[in-house]
Length: 244
Image 1 (spheres, rainbow, N blue to C red):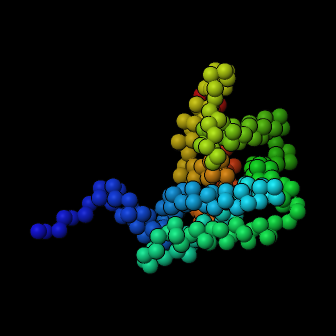
Image 2 (cartoon, helix red, strand yellow):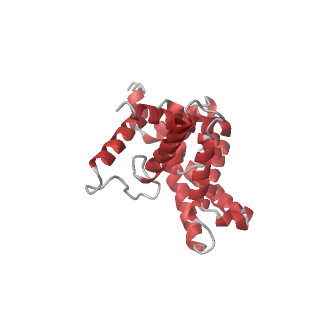
């Protein structure tokens, strides 16, 4: 019997072949989209390791900090894993993620422990949007734009338009105003139209909760470039919403 010819459909429908294809593109072709897909696929593993450590030390640390250490460990595992050795990635990554969480906890200072993960993320966003230029043509308009940009970030973080990492559904309720729901729907539609890298930054920052440094590692960009992409995406959303 002649061997059947492998098609693209075979790769898509066979999970093992699909993952092998992702690893080939991520490791040997340096494809950032495949790397992001693999990260998203194993993020549940990272969170489960963080949750286990949080259960042991609930009173001493913030869960968001443990998740960041877990994401860092997952990114390191993505870099070091050799798919040709035949070891399942989950088995390879789990001890490395756990080790990075443990090491991260040792590195935490008292000041770090006092500053919550959410506060750090919001400070990062604020720095990304940047100060208003020294002498804008219309200072009031510049201030209004900054306020809208900050509000967009809060809406993306807290409403479920970008799915939340904790699984809580924060989409608008029937009791919220029509204008509010229409604004959320418009933002959700515009998210789908963002350029690839801008969309990836928004997804990973607001959905996953990654810091800009970790997004830079994931997408093979500089931290400064991630900050620029974040600012560009938020400003693009603001401009498009004004035309709705």
